[in-house]
Length: 190
Image (tube, rainbow, N blue to C red; front, side, top):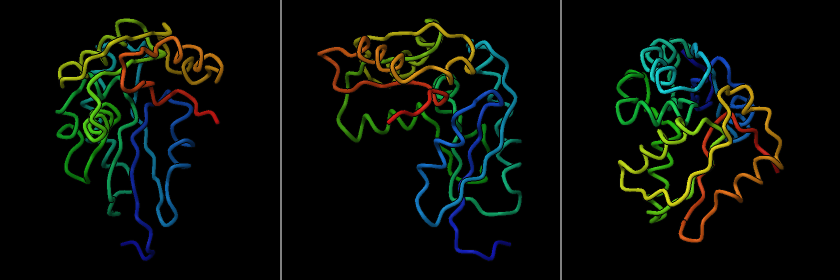
């Protein structure tokens, strides 16, 4: 159906995410195109609300330029991907290979030989614990976790670079081999 030589990728974003589209597009290499769809999400970022994204993933994947081949699909929510766990790929369907932040982080830790991390999130403490638990279930020792206490991902998107930096520094720990900043809604900074 396509007549161009572009490699196309899909992105499933939360309806409330204000940052991921622009940030993800900046990461795309020449010769690729990113196509985005959104799924309903209700704040606050509780386990129940994050888990509710799972049944919406297959329909969202099918809405990404229907009939056009995709090289891969990303689900852009770190905390929801931590809650949904390894079953996330099956929930998304078989349209294209799927990746999500929590699983990608775990693969990155494995590739780098990292077994001890510090964790900083903008989330509520209970949501931060869900991410830490996902990492721990895969053998990653979370030596320190720091939560900024936000319940709404729209608030998370409006955090300033100095606020994020301050919390990241507070989360770092001398025993950590890596510092993981969780949340695709966090704005990028230079």
